[in-house]
Each structure stands twice: as structure tokens, then as C-alpha cells.
Image (cartoon, rainbow, N blue to C red; front, side, top):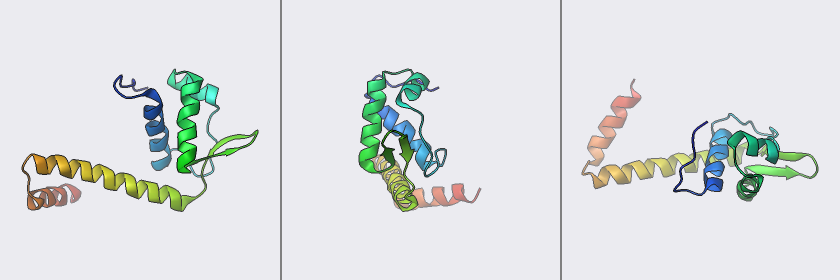
Length: 119
């Protein structure tokens, strides 16, 4: 398991890890998540930290809570697709911002991406 970055709150890193598992399809729509205690053991963190991360994910709608049963990945595949689309747009914007700041032109970036996608 990848170590946590000391410069970023652990609960935010947990959100990113669980979010990534949902967006990548490793956690399927409707799939039950491990219990808070099991996730705390897996990530070797305090259960309260896991609970906070899950509460934030519930706020996004990616995770739903079923009383006395547990927490599940949403079955709303349109929501998952929308979050995936937002995620890729955000990542690409960050990369483009950095490349522009380093002096690359749109044409250079486009040609490089085109060449890489042909592989």
C-alpha cells in the first residue's frame, strides 16, 4: 500500500483513493464497501478518519448509506460518468497549465498528444 503524503490531510487522501477505485471501476456501481473498521485496518488509519472521508464521499453522491446495512457505491452510472468526465478535464487542465507556463505552444502539445495516442 502506498504511504500517505504528510503534507495532505489523510482523510483527503482517503477520499482520493476511494474515489479513484470507483472511477476506475475497481469498485462497481452498487458494490458494498468494507466496514469503517475494515477500511481503517486496510489503510492503517483511525476509524474516525475513514468515517470523515466516507461522509465527504456521501456528499458527492458517489457513496450511499443504507441504514444498518452499510455503505455502497452509487448505482447512478450517469453520476459516475459525470465525475469521471470532470476528473479527466481537471487533470488535463492542470497539465496544460504547466506546459503553457513552460513555454510550450498549443501546436507542440497537440502534436505530442497526437503522436502518443497513435501508439
